[in-house]
Every structure is written in structure tokens, then in C-alpha cells.
Image 1 (cartoon, rainbow, N blue to C red):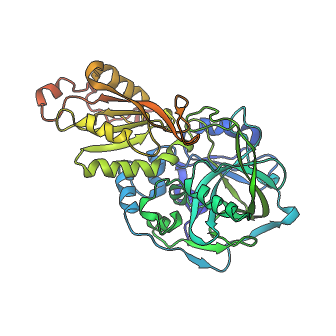
Image 2 (tube, rainbow, N blue to C red):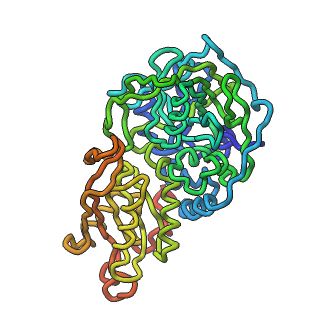
Image 3 (tube, rainbow, N blue to C red):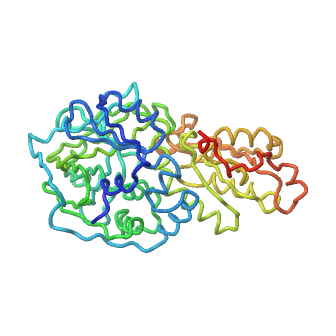
Length: 457
């Protein structure tokens, strides 16, 4: 049996919080924020038969389930899989399972239980994976976007986060032709990792879909769309097909960014008119709530954490973990490491600040006795191990992230911004100085980790 969202949720078992009581779709955003673990809503009022899944990547424990490994092995596992050569998908003749096709005037965004994420969002939206391809062929783009319907069959969609998708649309518009496009919702979550891979240097002749097989240990199966000349993952829950009007732009947003601000606010985005919506029987709408402690931050960061982990370890740093911590809005990157000698942590921090994506403006190094997923632990480490005149440094006017609220626009367009960056070395003394390092030994209770209070309740 091919791996899809359904087989994943079944295999995840008790790790998924299953909400059986009906919920209103207006309440979904607030409830997802509270869930704090993979969650499946089994009944949505007004949408019979629909389920909705989220938070499949919220932390390392959830990511480990997706990849079939252990939480402390997620980054080395993913880095090794991303280094393997691509495997081309194969085309099959029909979609597995039972589907309902809504074509032409029957294709209506109102069929789907999209929901409003933030209080200022203009209405319900959908998060989907995009498939598009240049007019002369070439590798298809596979990436994420937000779809914002403004009537039954027309919507704006965000294009700014994907340079490849933007270049493909430019090529179609240069011809004055509408661009075929497909939106895919609900695959095995490993597909989503590759759809979030924003700097695929070694995929110039391929596409992100060619790398999915390395993550799921099986060849990806594609099926031809019904109304546009594209192929999409066959084992999906929803496929939306349409065309992007050449040269048409419309106000889109505001919508929450990964930094949790309404930045850049209302923007002019392309317009898609849909020609078909295919919905699998008893569908699961996989969504990413774009607010805090959702998949919006960790899923964007995960493949790039693996790349950064590999670069740091190849340069000899003793790295245990790397995380664009979700409570940093993808603008803060933390490395957990044991410095071998004085100054080594500073070198690692400089490498982190230079990464193209997600282009962190704050880099922090912590020691191996600090919980990288705990903001409390990090503040303790900063407060007790950082001597500010020695362990903090600032880089002025560096290239930054377009969604950084502190950045200022530079020449070349709204996505070219500069900002100050800073780094904090919150590690203890290096391993080369055992007496100094012993002074920062953390106090812990006897038998910590060997007994648990829950065993006595």
C-alpha cells in the first residue's frame, strides 16, 4: 500500500490527538493553537464527512514520526536523505480510491472547510502545495502557498515565497498566456518537507518531487490532471486545477507571517480561476494554521535546519541540534553544541547568520545540557553564561528576510531588505578548559530521568 496521509495518521496512532466532537470551522484556528501536538478534527459543522489535520511537524517528536526515526536523529537522518540522488516519479493512469469531480460551474471553493487564521484575515483561506511548470517544460515547481478565495471559482494566491514559481509565471506572462496550475492538499507529510525546500542547489535539472522518494522509501506516483496539462501526486485528498490569468493582480491579505505580524499586509498577487476540484471520499483537509506553535514555522525551517546541521558538522563543529525555534518566528536560529576551543562558537554563529534561508537575524549557541525546545532553558543559559561585552556581537546592515518587521527596503525591490543581525554565545567554557567548564556544571536532582512522577499516580 502506498504511503499517504491516511496511512500516516493510522501509523501515528495515539500520537495524534483525535477530536471527535463537532467543531465550528470559525473555531479551528484557536483550537489548533491549543493542541500542541498532531491533531485530527473528525467532525466540522456544516461539512459532512470532512476531517481536518494539522500540527504534523510541530516539534522533533512529531517530525520523527513523519520520517520514521528518533527525535534526536531527525536532522542527521534528513541531511543524509537529502544528499541522495533524485528518483523520478512514475505516472499512473488513475487516482487510487473513490473521488468526486466538481468541474466547471460546480467547482466551488465553498466545498472546502477553509478557515480564517488571524483576526484581521479578510476571510477563510487554504494552505496548499502548488504544482506548475514553464511553457517550454523543465522541472515542475512544487511549493507551498496560501489561497484566498474572493468568489466561488476565483482566488488570489501568494507567489512571493517561491522564486522558481515566480519565474515560471513570468515566462507564461511573457507569452501573454494563462498559466496552468494545480493545488494539492493532503499527501503523506514527507511531501511537505520537499515543498518547503527553498534552496535546492542540487536540483537544477530536477524538481522537488524527485526527492520525495528518498524520504518515503518508495517511488512517487503521479496522475495526470483532468483539465490542465500537469501531473500531481496521485495519493492526495484534494486536487484543485485552474489557470492563472496573465498579468492580472488583485489585493491579497493581510495574512499572518511566520513572525506573527501582518507584514507585508495587503499585497498585489496573481489571480487563479479554477476549472476543477477533485475530492477523495471521506476527505481529510490537511492545513497549516499560520499562527504560533503551528506547522508554519517548523515546516518552513526543517529542510534548512538539516542543511545547516550538515554544513556545521562538516566543518568540524560538535553539533547536537540546530533549530529555527518556532517562538522566534523563523528569525532566530539556535545551535546546540559543545565548543572544542575558545572562539569556536563564534565561528558557528557567523555561519548561521549568513544562511540565505530562512535568513535568521538572531543566532544563539547553547551548550549540550540545555533543552533547545525550551525557551525557559534558553533564557537561563543566556542569563547565567553570557558575558555581554565578550559573548554578544552585532552585524550591521546585513541582507535580511523580507518578513522581518525591523528590516528596511534596499534597492532592487521589496524582497531585497537589510537589517542588523546579532549573535549570542550562551555556551559554557570550551572542552579544552575542563576546570573552567566544571564551574558551569548544571545542578540536577539525583536519579533525574530514572524515575517519573506519573509512575506513582
